[in-house]
Each structure stands twice: as structure tokens, then as C-alpha cells.
Amino acid sequence: MPKLKNHSGAKKRFAKTATGKYKRRKAGRKHLLTPQSGSRKREMRQTGIIKPESAEGKLLKKYLPMD
Image (tube, rainbow, N blue to C red; front, side):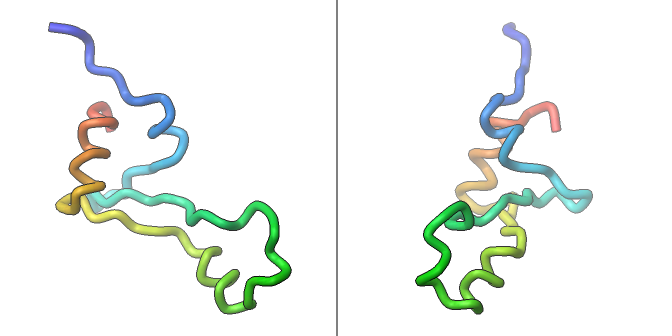
């Protein structure tokens, strides 16, 4: 059986919390921020949470088996 390895792109972008959820950064914070409202920029400052039972969470579980 082959070795289990984490997906190198996923391990740079997602982190597993102590409760088993995944943290991610929200998109849209790099450039072209002037036309966006302040409330939208503040919303993007917070980390996004991915639940492990969601479709994305199940995919991340496959991508990050060592976490």
C-alpha cells in the first residue's frame, strides 16, 4: 500500500482546528479593495470555517490524511 501523504497545496491553505473543523482564508483580499465596502472588507478579514461533514470537509479529509 502506498504511503499516505498530505496534498501540498491543501496543507498550505487549510488548517485543522482542535474540534476537527478546517480553517481557511477568505478570497478577495489581495487587490482592487477600493470599490468594496468597508463591511465587506471586514467580513473577509475573518477566517472561514469548513465543517467536516460538509462536502468540502470530506474532500479535505481525503487531502489531509495526516492531520
